[in-house]
Length: 44
Image 1 (cartoon, one colour):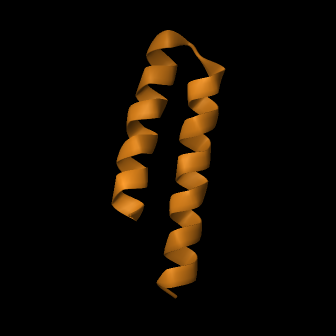
Image 2 (cartoon, one colour):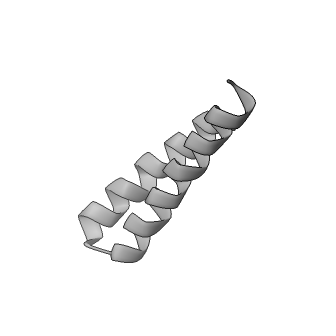
């Protein structure tokens, strides 16, 4: 699941950079935060 979220973050971050869209940057940030939380909680 973390890898899917990291790939989603990379895709959204790239799309946000190319289109200069802060919404996509925000979604990429939340995907990264969620992947980090899953990593910390389920893989101590």
